[in-house]
Length: 466
Image (cartoon, rainbow, N blue to C red; front, side, top):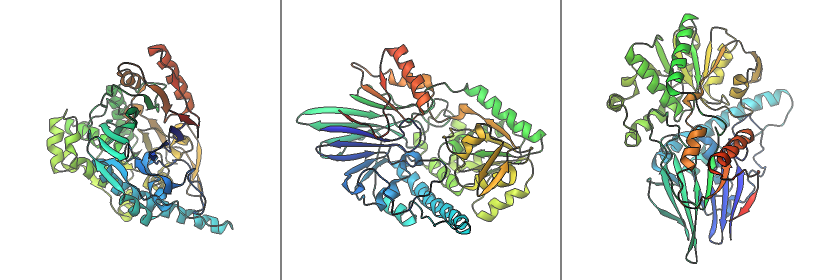
């Protein structure tokens, strides 16, 4: 018996989760959090569609919370087995899961104050700091290209996906009675525009392929044009005597932005006087990025040399706001600053506090540089909302909103097709995951046109027998 159940990131982007069951045991591939509006959950409510205590091993492709963020909840509900990750992913999760637990606790504390005033029952966080620490104790780090047995008869190997530091394509072999089936999960494939990381490794054989389709409907904008547009927005904010606010993912996007801002600064074209990284987590992550320079693409020797002494050596006008008071003080700066803060989809973090003070100001410029999932505050702003509600209040949207798609850390449509087209011999059975349905349908059609290759689109909860 070999079955695969599609539990998360099915016809949507968040909550990546797949259950593989064999006669040897059960493996959970990904344990991602759904990133959207805060959905109250009582701690007693059954959260998983399976018993976490029956899972034998967990495999995570990378550290982003839509792939890893429910790991503390899994541990809370009884999982005690190993969690296989790459070495950089282990380091990143040491920061990210604790930060997620802290935000869970704080968001619920804020929510409960509002609920108390309206006579509603209080809620509890999905997990707390103790759960995060327990989950971190389960991590088992592997190097790239290290083939390893996870349970009897099942082996995995991580290959570089080029999405964020430590991101992996997962190769998984199921062996029984001398026969072997190979499942490949693309994870999130990187964009060749990435200034720091290598392109995704090519995989040539598989029986089953699970492939992301986040941007299955289009290619990203040309890299040079994206940087030109970014520079124009920065200049416009100076002319307007306003600030730039960038909701950025702490892992990957923030480091790419710091790299490009450093390039502008060194060319003498950056007019802003100060860049603030207003995210303790992004600060820690940037330090981890600097520790894993061996995974960079080495295309910019000047950067590689400068980063040895820290990001401030690359971008001298960079400052870190580590404390809440330092973050609040940024509200006194009315112009000439670039403020990078999490979260990337504006579902939590300090960016929401900056929006509270600046979203209604016409001189403010908000720059989105990454995908915004349905149901998030970021998606509402990108879609042109004139009025939004968060933190229990209504806000008019008068700030100027900019979307720069070329910064995405995900492969575009042509890159996805090219990567999948490198498989040799008989093509694997292809399943599209991690994408909104409309984008999946476009990519499905492109696979048929380009390769005469049928791409299946699973439904949530669907189980297939392999």
